[in-house]
Image (cartoon, rainbow, N blue to C red; front, side, top):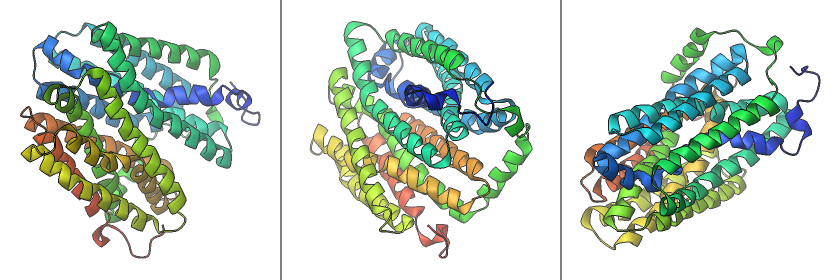
Length: 404
């Protein structure tokens, strides 16, 4: 156990950032690595695209629930035992996914996989706040966020290549191996960063009380609608495109990885623009303009998907700004809700992030429910979610005197 007055070992090694980033990417890696395999898994299990998309909804639900629990529990008993438990569960669930031979079992195992992996994804960021001073923590978190943004671009490319040489079970074997490596790194390279004298005690009721206050605040709901609507549009895209691109438009799994990756590049461009404009425009104004750009792009997307106009690229191109604004809206609304609740920053950020993944679970479920083998379900849900994001930035949902 490191003494709180001494620098934590993670701050004394150039590998500290890599170690922390390896924990933060559990979520995007687990979601995006298996996307190219979804049609193949569906064929092997004898289920349609709609049922396969439930595996994504189940994963997001597990991630969402775990996120609300891990924060207060790790505040009470320390980070290491919670992370080690979560990664161990992730490894077991990943191995079991490789042997699943029914869709019901696969959905349940994906839920458990997410519930386990969420511990590393959430608490990796908490460790940054534990061991670095405030300004250094902001810099490290930005670098971790960059790695987390790159992962969704690379994971489908790796997943597509795996399918070129092996079947879909290789995806889950690789996730299990990654989990084992992360478990070893945590065990040997991360001493407990949250010492007993800084622990708050297990007070879940206090955390729930903060969440209750957020539920009655219209401004907080505005943040949820904006960030959640944007997130939901992205997860409708994630749930729909494996089948829209690979089955409807006959795109190879390898090319699918490329088409997925260009949307991540769009996210990076919007995020860079956001970092430069945020000091010039009020936060809500900047976010509203981004939300309107995404909604305007969703209209030709809707027409192309419903009426079959323009082929593949009429779907791919309008999605670029729709998906591009996701990271910036999440960052902006996180900053906004933390400014609204300066005494409950952790709970406010956790509530917003959990709500975003919850919205993603709902939108991916709707895509699976409405799926008819065409792009229609995906584009309708994406357009609806973009409209909800705009709604969250109307005067009804923010106080005129609030800053930012």
